[in-house]
Image (cartoon, rainbow, N blue to C red; front, side, top):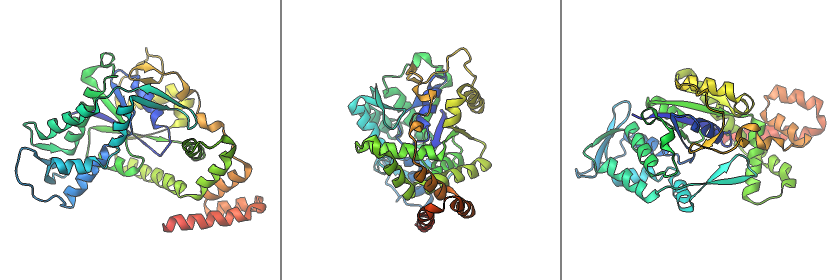
Length: 357
């Protein structure tokens, strides 16, 4: 059974940074692609629990899948593919076809690594190992482990000679929500979860910059796009996710919370804590350096949080405080900034609107 390290966090929280740092360990292979395969297993599990699978006539391409409660169902390849397509697997396909992997260490600056992945053979291997082998009964985790084996086999850039093959941990991102953390924990996967937190103001900056980059907007419009983010429900979704993760951490002992700030300001100390949590030896002889497939990629990911240098206007910062403060705190802030009464009212309206929605 493959040991798994699942990386969770909000959108633009710094999940890629920790994957680069973990990749430098002899016992870890990092999957940098947000393929979200776990969504497929969540869908299969929901259908098992809700008895959505019809009885399938026995043939060579039918398997029995069970979850941690030993609830089970017989599914065929078409059933599996329906769930498989709910993941972000098309992203993997697109990267394989383009043969490049984006190196995202800033919302404004993009670089690329080579990515040599045999996607067609990966799909063939996946189908053969699950549906055409002698084994006909699988747990949800068995299916994930087969996915990992097929993924590693078809990723030609991997430098497996630098890894301790019998002690491999596979590190991969989870979807940007707490539900996937709850799923792998409840299903009792042989896994640990690292949740990457990040200062909320910083996430909003990166979110605005990310949208600007996608739409080729000049940086002089930064404050306009930052203000737009304050009007969406993005704040509420990020805050909800963090609250639910804290609840899950009290229930399950397989969750570790770090932050992008800790990973950049106290990299060595924080990595020591993470290795201890993962029950892995600390490679003291190795230089602390982000790597991609075992190759050093420079220190841009850990020297600083690259999007933080962009400053929000005073008006936007006060609006941000109104949006993120409790009512009495916001009211106290208003007394000191009475000229922004309109933003105070707008923040109350937005909170009520997003809460109802």
